[in-house]
Amino acid sequence: MEFSTEVVEKMAEIMEEEMGRIMPEAGDIREVETEMRKFLRKVGAEALKRYLERVDESEPLEKSKACECQGQQEYQYRREAVIVSVFGRVRYKRRYFSCGSCGSGQSPLDKRLHIVPGAVTAGLAELLALAGVESAFEESSRFIERFLLFRVSDNTLRKETERFGALQAAREEEWKKKSRDETWLQERLQKFGKQSGRLYGSLDGVMAPCKGEWRELKNITWYRVEAVRSYQPRRHHASTVGEQNDLQAQEISYHCDIQTPDQFSHLFWATGCQRKADLYEELVFVCDGAVWIWKLIERHFPHAVQIVDWYHASEYLPPIAEAVFGKDTPEYHAWLDQARSQLWEGQIDALIHDCQLFASIPLAAKAVHEAVSYFTNNQHRMDYARFRQKGYFIGSGTVESAGKQIAGLRLKRAGARWTEAGAIATAKARAAWLSHQWDDLAIRRATLPLAI
Image (cartoon, rainbow, N blue to C red; front, side, top):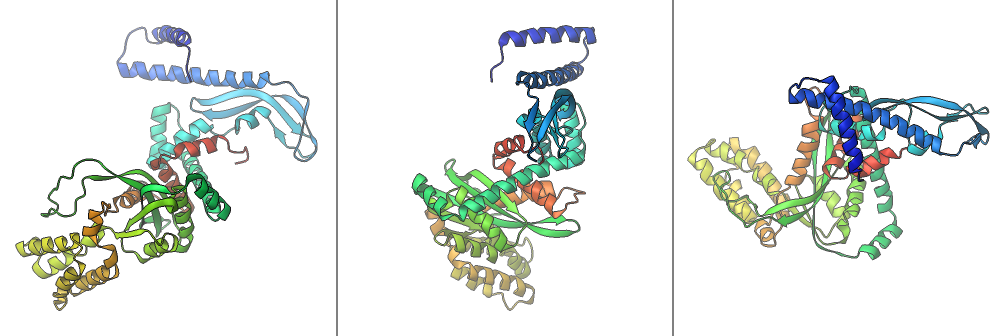
């Protein structure tokens, strides 16, 4: 949208003159900016009022309209309404009709622009929800007051944030319905065909607080991996293994819910269809060793490459080294370097053998049992030398990041008290923001029915 340079200059001149009247003597720049923002807010509120009234008056005047009850709504008068916009409270008058049969009333202008009298506008709602996915509602309310120069309650912030989460949930339900439709799946295949290249997926769970109990928020990330620079080995915990500095996740999309694995299975398949995961010539999953994760993958994508996250696997080794040699001793580091090198090269049989040598040591028995069980159950997913040779990403950092960014930075903030529904809605809204899918939700919010 382009604005007339002439109009902008004229308004700037008027504003400069008004500021000269308000502040005849120059103050500090912060004071000047604040007063200008206050002025612009008042101008915006007045302009929005006039715009709404002009749009209402431009429509042909009708004396009656059909009502949903099959009766007639009769024109009453130009009735005043109040909305809370990005400029604050705005009062405007518009035509109003009411039905003598059912008692309902409506304003054609409100219906046309999806305005709910007494509520926040879609433009303000988007800003409130954005603040709500970033920080605690009370804190967000203070931020909004600083930015917009008027206060919005933390309860209103919560409602709008959860509403955006509900809109995301509605989108996901639409995806689930489509993903179960064989006709839609066939049409999609014909339209897009097989996708070249490689797509990745990762799943994980992270605990989130819900009214005195902890619930598992399950996360999905879909992403592509691209080379970003030449590989430069770096020391990692006194070892050169464990680094893939030449690869970076791109185009990441996040999805989450608090559900059982069977329930979460539907979201997993539906979001995969949205990313065309089933159409890619190569699909790769990098996850930890949780049984429920690999069951879902084998159910929906049985031909995908399965890789256990390198970092999760390597975390089973330090407890053994510490139990046998003591923490941070030369022997501790020597054994750990050797074990990590075996893991890095996919020498799992040798690694299992070396771990089992310490099984008879009482302090190490538990750590050895856990490591050997993990490596044995996931051996076919730990061929790291071959995976690296084929250029696969072997770290699940994207889904680990999802847990930190969604649950850690938002749901687990100090003093947070969540209902399960509130936690899910806020998490879904934040996931949509992180996935660069916010505009889709903002458009849906702007066209909600008046009753919503």
